[in-house]
Amino acid sequence: MLNGWVLAVVFITVLVSLCNPRGVSDIAFSSSNPPSFSSPFDFSETQHLFSLLSTLQYDFYRQSCPHAEKIVSSSMALIHSRRQDVSASLLRLFFHDCFIQGCDASILLDPTTGDDTYSSEKQAIPNLTLKGFVEIDQIKEELERLCPRVVSCADILSLATRDAVVLAGGPFYPVFTGRRDSTRAYFEEAMAELPRPDDNINRTLYLFAARGLDERDMVSLLGAHNIGKIGCQFILNRLYNFSGTSLPDPSIDPEFLNLMRFKCQEKEHNNTHVSHDQVSPASSPTPEASVETLRRSTLGMSYFQELSPSLSLEGGFDTHYYKSLLSGRGLLYADQQLMADENTGRLVKGYASDDGSTFRMDFARAMVKLSVLDVLTGSQGQIRERCGF
Image 1 (cartoon, rainbow, N blue to C red):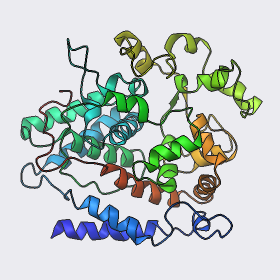
Image 2 (cartoon, one colour; image 1 turned 180 degrees about the vertical axis):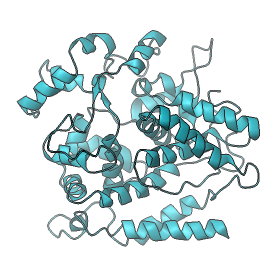
Image 3 (cartoon, one colour; image 1 turned 90 degrees about the vertical axis):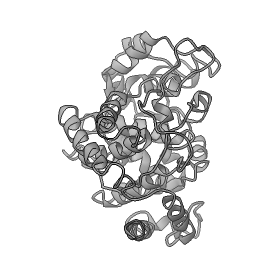
Image 4 (cartoon, rainbow, N blue to C red; image 1 turned 30 degrees about the vertical axis):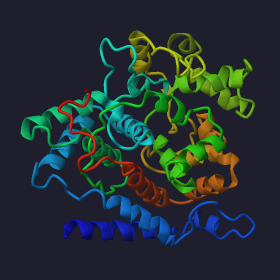
């Protein structure tokens, strides 16, 4: 009964999100440029989301481990008080997990010692700089002491990410639970199918659409770049060797180019940079020492104050990411490419035009959709005792 009531609330919330009044609605009603994605009151999309949510439950552990969600929440509050950048770390970790074969905690699996034929997703080049594993393991250990082999790592990651978003000033959204953990990792898929910082708009749109996420979902989810830093290793090719030309991206304003080069000193290129071109999907995994160097690197830039003195002093879930794109100051090529497509460009303008409420509503809606991608339930998968194996 309770599960049905919450589903109804989510259903209504999604309907409200589908008809935002500011900046976004002009896309659906533009006769000169019909949208390629869902228009307001698209009940088929909402019903699809409703059916996905119905495979999970609200408060799934209410009998088997009744304090599970409170433990995750209190643990995240403590972790965030000590390390505020954990919100950005978990958001990225969660996205990389769900984007490859669904939200099944496969990203958390460690490499198998002595097995050269098996590579974990952690070893895939796009995942080398991921953080947050230690924090998820800490929460899992606490839950295992109370409820052994009951709460899945996939649910812990989903709940912890939602709490991290809220702690960073982002919107609350419901997380339904009952996910189970994958029995394997997907190294090849992670190498080939995760969005890359140098992707053009067509590839980014394709990758999101392949997972049932439309332009609006994509643009709002990329707004997670509002928080945290973009590591310099993801920017350097744009600054010094764009598309293999040994020249900077010609679309970058010279003043902004100099700022980015100042923030990301060229010596970082020699010390920590590993590009997708340097290691192919068939290559052996990057040496552990290089991985640690990448993860420990602190050089990076944010979409906040250091990019534009005209931005507000608030640095959380607001519109500064979209305002940066409007002014041509996207850090990643893939981010700035949102302005290269008319539909996604209009969404950027729409999100930048108000106080952030439209973006926050759509971000919450997109996170609900992301969180239920290809989840394992029932007798599928497993409940791991430890998230790494």
